[in-house]
Amino acid sequence: MAEGDITTDDGVWLANFEEHYLPAVGERMGPGEAPKPNALIHISIGTDKNFEKMIEFYMKFFNAHVVNYRDKRDAGGGRAAFLSWDARDHRFAILERAGSTHAKGRAGFAHGAFQYDSLADLVKLYRQCKAWGISTDHPINHGQSTSFYYLDPDGNEIETYIDNFDTPEECTHFKHWQQYRPGLDYDMGAGAFDPEKMAALVDEGIDEKILRNRDQVIRLKAEGKL
Ligand SMILES: [Fe+2]
Image (cartoon, rainbow, N blue to C red; front, side, top):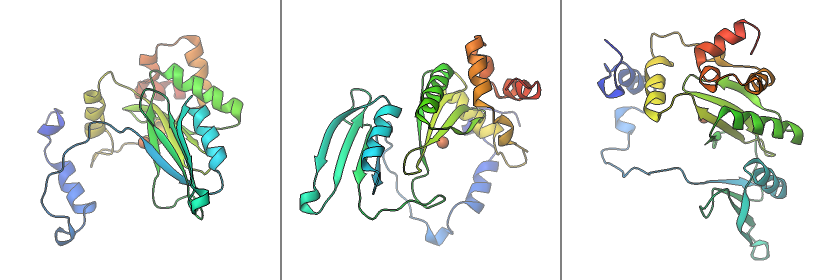
């Protein structure tokens, strides 16, 4: 069958998903239809001993400002800081939670992903982080997105990314039809790249349309340029 809109799917995904990813029928939540949110507006994150470092990290990382701050330590609580990078009242909240612990591979929040305007912006942030002593973790072209990951002072992961296609529909089309599809041998790792080489290619003025194309990334890697 020809690739079409995901609503024309042949059911391969759904059958695989139902079989391997959902609880048994008797354990499911039951019928009902929730309203859909229209955007992801903010993330709140708890921290124990790194409250000040976490605030500084996210103020710098997002070029953000503090909208609000509270201190309930006298009442047996903790502090909280609410940060924003735009007109929203807060985009990121840091909550002081005594006794909360972090361990790599734990359950819970895995990462938040933040979209940027261009690959040049991702590279600019990569270089700024490097100057701050923060290294990127597995930069990669996923096919539909190009991502650089970082860890905050508590070890929480932050993904910074751009869409590789011009529209969300094209990204969704790629993700549905060309990535991890049952029967398709998709090697995600093939899209991993050297951030320094990517930065150099951006400096050279190579068209971002080329640099965010996964096939071109794989070709450039084979040529030793990425
Ligand atoms: Fe992600």
